[in-house]
Image 1 (cartoon, rainbow, N blue to C red):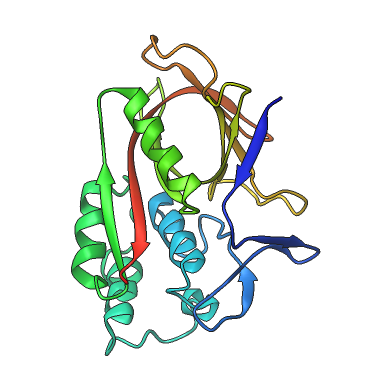
Image 2 (cartoon, one colour; image 1 turned 90 degrees about the horizontal axis):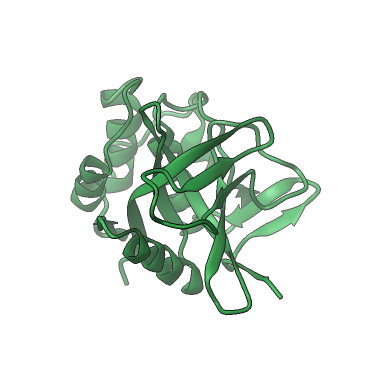
Length: 218
């Protein structure tokens, strides 16, 4: 029988998918692309930092003045003001460097990439079993890439991962589910784009690219 493992710390109720933020308040983790910045990676990062309790929900209020005296404030200003509308995406190599440069007192980010897809899946699995969201990147056959936050996995009776369940900032959140996107990785890894990206309105063949693992700096 297949089993689903969901990372700890998430709560789903009539208010949506919630997580405790820096102020210890239950807030919606989902951020829809277009409300903060143009790059999907920024949204995935913000949701990740909310999950870790590094940000408050009010930090994402575009009408709130960012306190640039703090390291966290300087980082938010860099993402949301200095960088502006990022239309061409945000490379995970750059994001890893900037996270560790600005907010290393709070978290440590590690970008992980292998040409061997099995190793990438193993690293995503390692995040999820330790209740750490994984920022994953998927690439499409027609070109372009997209950032997602993996929060759960499905395994078969032999323990092999068959699906990744993700929060996708490019589409609406689902009020009755923990995720709004599925990555089906049950097929053979031999093709260049072996997996399926599936949402309520779209589906496409994809391949997994690099990931970012973010943990609190204890």
